[in-house]
Image (cartoon, rainbow, N blue to C red; front, side):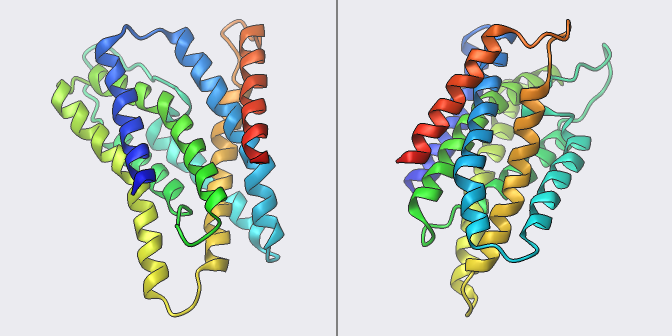
Length: 237
């Protein structure tokens, strides 16, 4: 329950910052670089070793499936998971529902491996990764909702729906585990493999994007180093 509250409050608090401070693209880029580096760090240092230590011969296919699934979801979200704020033409009518649906699927899948009766440290690592990842997503999402003409209250309602998706993914897996007579251990490994594929796509999209002048600037480089360092420290705990 505490983990669920952390996940929900982080999204709501981060998204609400749009109302309190002027959005600075440079700050968002730093947050994205840190979150991308942290995600890829925990993926390689913690999640991949965990999955492949219990791997069946097909687990790599599930990683690839997660990668391709995230690629497909971005046809709907237009890259909001890694900070893209697609600007439409002036006066163009755009529905925020497709964006919300795509991000909700993304968030629900990320929550599915968070099941309390599995490795506690792994769950905590996943939650930290998702929390850090959700901070720039929430800022981007609220900015887009407002850009699409949503009122503040409607935008907050949509944000709340998004905030609930990761806990709902976890609840779904927990109920499934309780209802099935057989253990979900192997299924959990496959679910985690899918999430790894999603993390790999999102993090590499963030890290390999360059500035308009095609330069990978020094500030972003040092932010990435810090993000990887934090991920390494957490993997040792």
